[in-house]
Image 1 (spheres, rainbow, N blue to C red):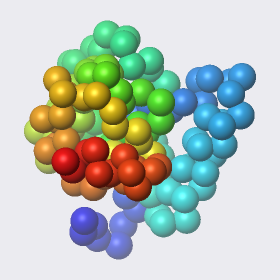
Image 2: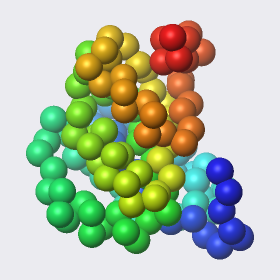
Image 3: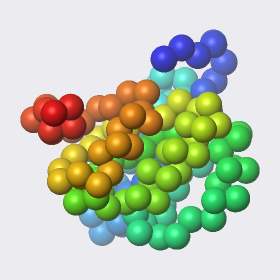
Image 4: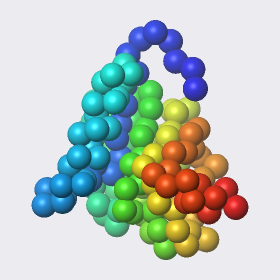
Amino acid sequence: MTFTNRTIKAYILNDTSREKHHAGCLLVMKNLKTLCKKYGIEILFSDKALPDENIDIIQFKENIKRFDLLLLNGEGTLHHSRATNFFEKCEIAKDLKKKVILLNTVWQDNQNTEHYLELFDLVRSAFIWRLREIYS
């Protein structure tokens, strides 16, 4: 992925820090935000919507125009063909020529949603054996 020397403006989708009782979720989001800052990525919005919440497509289209990059945190959500609203947001971002990255993901039993993998400019899994499933 190529960007100019300007700050990259990012939207995080699936901010799992909403799970305040879960130390792992809090740590994942803290580390993600720290790494983004280190590499010149400014997080302008961190979406705490749940995977099954309805989305306001018109509002999302307006919001995403301000961003260069959509980061989908796959932590704990991308299995059994769930989280289609997250994929719909990624699809909208891609249609608007935004870079879309899937990271920190488990990918399991997604036969009905595997076509969404084509949306991502980059995929990073938490586990190498999950990458085999993603690309099989």
